[in-house]
Image (cartoon, rainbow, N blue to C red):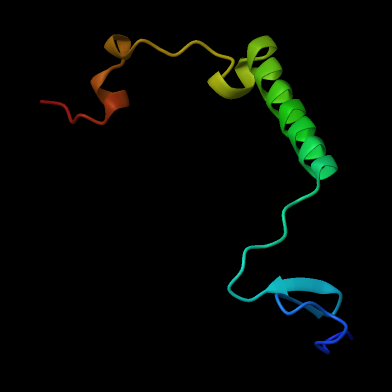
Length: 81
């Protein structure tokens, strides 16, 4: 475990191979990591929007919504007069 000041810069401390910072922001991600993250997010949004476009029944339901004016008092739970 590298915890001596001579082997590790003062703003970064290594503990069990993980980097943690004290009163500093984390180191910025690499350019490759940003590109990969953007590509994965783009694919995920494409997947969701494509399936909403081509198969809206998964979200909106596959059956027509009944007309509430055709419901009887018994179906609505209204007691008889």
